[in-house]
Image 1: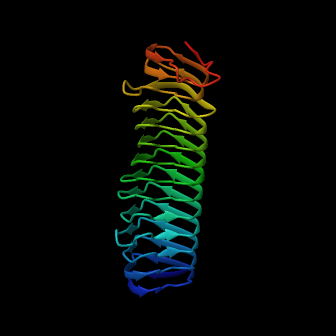
Image 2 (image 1 turned 120 degrees about the vertical axis):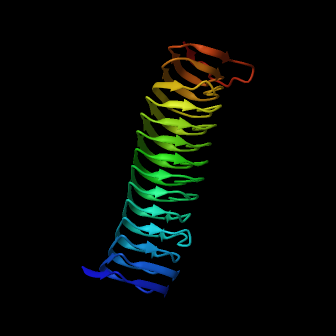
Image 3 (image 1 turned 180 degrees about the vertical axis):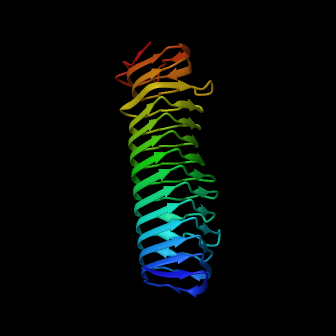
Length: 279
């Protein structure tokens, strides 16, 4: 692997179509597509200021690097990307990827990030301003994620999340096969229209959670006082530790809350089969 160290580049495509290079303490200034169409790249302690530096790349390990806000949309249409201890101030950083691993990274402006990605691994990362993160992505494993942003995980498939704090409104809409363990999920309208959503030992807050869902499962979850009007028109199997403020018109299944219910609303709008057991 050829080493390039302690230097600066700028302009259009200065390292275009490189193969087998290691960048150390390199700064890429204003310009576009610095490493486009490259393969087998390592970057350590580098700074990326120009736009689109890692487009159409195959195989990149990026460690202790900084992507400034001007490096807009820096990694798209690529495969086998690993990022470790990076700071990314650029929005829309990761899209259309096959195989992306993120570890101990910080994303302060993560709006519209990780769209249409396949094979996503996230461990120990923080995402802020993360509206619409992970839209239409699949085969995702997450551990120890800290997320703040609206409309996350929409239209995603095959997700496993552990030990995370998700502060997010309208999360997990129209998802398939999502399981969340030992996490806190804050925000209104959680999991609407989801299919096969499972929550295990999670704490749920925010109004009207888990409505219009099919094959919904909750195991030993707790509900905050503001998590009211839950399960409307959902098919659900749920065991809830402690009380729940209110349940409204569940479609079918079985709900058990050890602390009881503030209110159970079964009205003229209940849809068939309307046979959910609530105890």
